[in-house]
Amino acid sequence: MKRFVYIITDRNRKNLHVGMCTDLLKTLKFYGEMPTLFFDSAQQLNRLVYFEEINTEEQAMERFKLVSTFTRPQKEKMIRPVNPDWIDLTIGLNYESGQKIRPSVFAGRPSIQPMRRAVTF
Image (cartoon, rainbow, N blue to C red; front, side, top):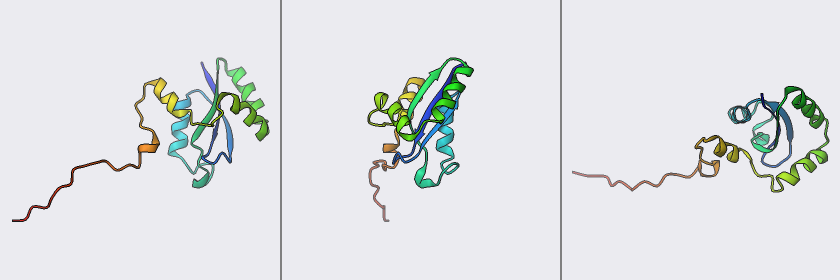
C-alpha cells in the first residue's frame, strides 16, 4: 500500500509540519475541516508544499522519522527544488483524482444575478 510523507504549511510559511498518511487527499481535507486543531486560526495549516509517494510502510516510516528531525533550513532545501514558488499542490492533486473543486480564490466572489425590480400595484 502506498504511503505519503508530506510537508504542509500556513499562508505565511511560518510553520512547517511533517506528516505521513495513506490517503493524502483525505488528510488534507481533515486539515481543512479542523483548522484550529494544531494551531490558532492565523496559523492554519492549509498549503501542501511537498510530498513523497513511498511504496512500503517501513520505508515510509523511516523517511518520516528522518524528515521530522530536519531543521527548517533542511526542509526548505527539500522543498525549493520541486516547488520553488511554494504553491499549494492540493489543486493539482484534486485535478488528478478527478474531483471538481473550485479554487478557494473564487469562493468569496458573489454570484452575478440580474437585479429584480419591486413590483408595486
